[in-house]
Image (cartoon, rainbow, N blue to C red; front, top):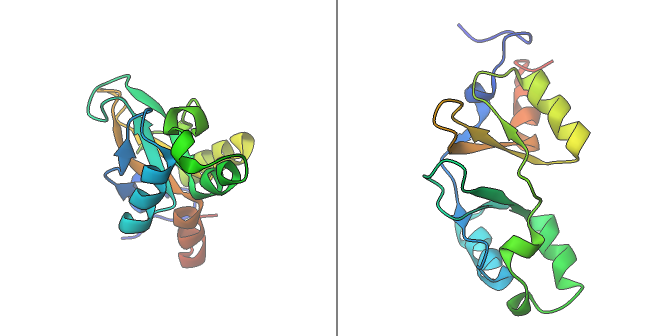
Length: 138
């Protein structure tokens, strides 16, 4: 049985797992990672499996903006990332997550294990749009 609009949860539509880099990674390497993995953002973390190491998120739009300032080889993920990363919990409703995205101007939320405080995956605006299209979102 599918969740109705009021019951749709982050865990129902999020992408599990992360594409990540360290804060010292050059933006050129981040761009290459996004291209190879075909993703719109990379999570910046010292160690994505360790609690509390989450740094931020670099989106494709962040890369485009950074490229207009100076060469991507001279810039690093830690200096460009949206910090702190905006987060959500798997059990939260999509409505709560969408509200947080809107409030923070964030197109991606890092989904966090609320017990271990480590990243589990991502929720993107595209994930929310898919739920809306299927009728599982508001």
